Picture (cartoon, one colour):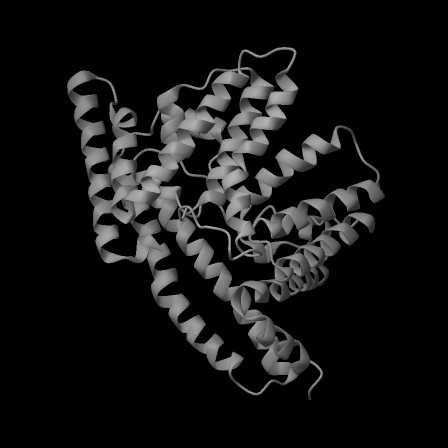
Length: 382
């Protein structure tokens, strides 16, 4: 992750400082914030320092997808056709990159870091234009796509949300600055300190002889590993964006307090869950569904979310597993799990069950397939 590279981190701070200075001086002298107009240059500078090839690739992708949005806006009779076509075309680099996992002989034209997130943002813009019939200002769109605090791993900014804060960035106050610094330090502490101890103990357990209690602790620490890794990055991205006046959406909100999978996915990787739910579930839903249809839709949503991470059989299994968990929950009518309507022991038990079932899924991301099956075998050893 580039946030943890000292030289990149230094330039990240320089870019943030420049943005704060420009915003402050322009408000003071011209009574207008010029920060948004120069944000694009700060973003390109940071990205180009990491990789000039990456900067060229993302700029080209941004320009092409912007043309799609402008073409779509005035269309009438063929609007739906081109909406579907452009949405599919936005995903081409993503799917091409994923296909190299199956066909290594395919030429890697260019390494496009973060393409999965940029694809989601580009498709979101196609939805925005199609359903709102509103214009997309060029500079706003470029800043939306290149916004460097969330460039590689989110949180996923929705265009409508970004547009609001882009047009009226929040002025930096002493209290806001202190809050942002604390949030950034918190994220760095998760990534560099907590994650170090968690990963060290986790690797020790994975290399140990497996028994049911060892496998159980491995599952718990796999969950912790993924949580501190992802939430630590989110904390840093939110802090960097906020210090420049952009309220970046939250990505984690106490997932361990979720007593149902429906609630869990509203608290874990929130921006991805919301994107998939709104762009797939809501669009395909169209009307109130029965339990069986809701279960099938829940399965589809979770399967798509898992496959978004990669096109390998490991993610296929993970998609089926998560899809079955959410689908069965819908089928059995267990989606509503409000704390105030349950007895405390029941609520705690359900939270443990939901989080432990998800914790098994995290093994897909933290261990090799061989280690995964070895851990599962450990549960049958006393």
